[in-house]
Image (cartoon, rainbow, N blue to C red; front, top):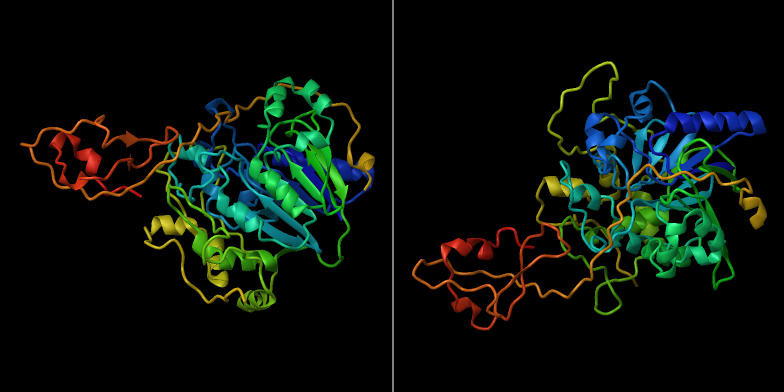
Length: 488
């Protein structure tokens, strides 16, 4: 199977398909599948544009809306992951993946699918330490913080991917795995991108969770984007396997943004299928889903709770039965938003989150929860209980030798780094009602202080010595200190 790999699409879908058509004609080949490594920008209308974390001067509708409306149809089956410049309100409708337009499929926060026996996995977004251990709490309309945190990867998705036990042929991520530069021509990379040198030396270029996944999953190919340059590497593993890594540029003239690889397939019809092992993992880790803006820990080896969710044969049989022995991904795309009309001025409206029928159907079949629906319904539980079981090639042919044409990036990246994280002792307090005749308690008296984490507008956390605290009284002016209605 000939698979075309695209780096950052940045909304230029029409151009990408035109390049593929030209490539097929010039090389006398047929491209079977296109995979995109993020910044896809599936913008349906101007509301979607307002949900993208990019400077206003770069907010362009581009061409995706034509495929969403049906004006055009993708000529090549397309699979993509999310990056850090996305219409997050659109993609948040499909946390477990789904069709964003006919013949264009999104993998979700993380996902694994099969195409003619080729197993493709991926994770959307980029890594930021301050949000990594939080739940999926964001919803539209976003503020300046949540517009960015919504595309930061979470430990839940990494934990789920680490439960996979069977070989992957292809894995997609937007940012690079940390440490990947030591397996390729790092000197040449630094010549192209001199500002990478300091981050590489400090071991800070890339995503630590993706580095963990790279050595755990050991896929045949790993494709990335994000840093707007082409870089190839060959990663050996202790098992004797090697992973061919390739990062590609963004879709612009004279940039190295596209590459075609040949991957052996099992033949048969070209269609997308769910991956049974992945579905089983989703089902049995549903109780770990959180929609709260606080720290969420994944199961560890200490304790009595189950920590290994690599499926058993019985568990997979149970899920296959739930799916009616049919793993084919249904062609059930449905439009959930108005389509951009270039000939009509669209009135601004209040942006509200939408539940996508594709996600409703998928969650119902598999027996799992839609995180966005949990937020909207203010559910007191972060999961729904369902039946469950107890646990009883040659590198030269890979690298394009053409010259690299350098241009300055015309996008602003989120370059903020997480601050040093401290250890916070979180204590929920039920404090007494204030009385005006009681002297005011100072905030710096050593017994009570308010803290915030990473500059986020978090609910207040009390870090305190609780001795004799219940005997304290407060004036009305300090009412905000003991309002526990929003404490997590």
